[in-house]
Length: 273
Ligand SMILES: Nc1ncnc2c1ncn2[C@@H]1O[C@H](COP(=O)(O)OP(=O)(O)OP(=O)(O)O)[C@@H](O)[C@H]1O
Ligand SMILES: [Mg+2]
Figure 1 (cartoon, rainbow, N blue to C red):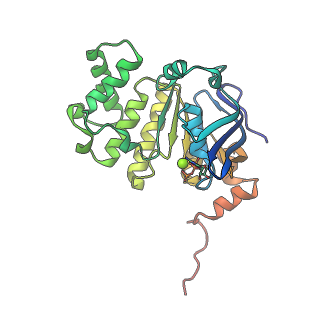
Figure 2 (figure 1 turned 60 degrees about the horizontal axis):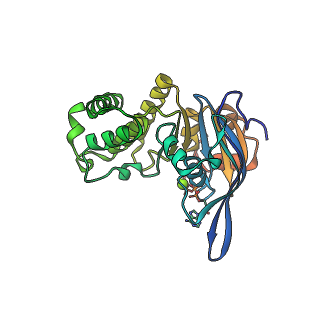
Figure 3 (figure 1 turned 90 degrees about the vertical axis):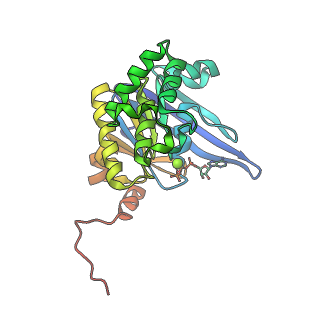
């Protein structure tokens, strides 16, 4: 398959297999998947529900739990195979080098801690900054996602869904990760807030130069935001190409099928009987 690789890779996924071990036998959710994400690149992963997108995202962060099991392949981050590292080494990389914003991330804030405490926890766990430094940094991060500094003392339930989502993203970015994996980061939000948040994230990417792996069901949005897009089906990649090619010249029949499932506002109107 063309376009799987990148001339300046930050992370290289090679022949990755992830199985779920169930009472009915082993199920291969990710089947021999290989691709690179370049430094500073926005890489999209598209495909129907259940095709294995989140399973890849969890494997990259080494956050998969039984019954999920990586049964083969390599995940090479800055030249080092993450699958060969100890739990302690992975913990040092997680958040600091690779951060993740989950599906329904707005619910991943701790409801009994103020936003300030949550920033301080993450910062102090991963760096040797003082509490005051962590708070000063948290204030800067709130500026970036357009939330007033005075809200730091508030608790998650005092924010709207979109604001909570932005808080999670601000916390994920606070350690300046090199890669941020976003698994449907804005699916639960209305389209206006979704666009606003994504525009902020992509603006920050230009400022800080991190790479993004972006998962969404919305192929049109994905091809607007990403540099390259991978299309996945039944655990395998079927096509990887630049957004422009995926949009204007999709080669694989499944990619064409995905497009045809979207209404096209430029097509001639059909009379409704
Ligand atoms: N804990 C589990 N046990 C068994 N099978 C699982 C488990 N979690 C996921 N799977 C299976 O693995 C496959 C891939 O799931 P995954 O969550 O990666 O899909 P996805 O592409 O992220 O879907 P969605 O777009 O709906 O989020 C699915 O067939 C799913 O049924
Ligand atoms: Mg998913």
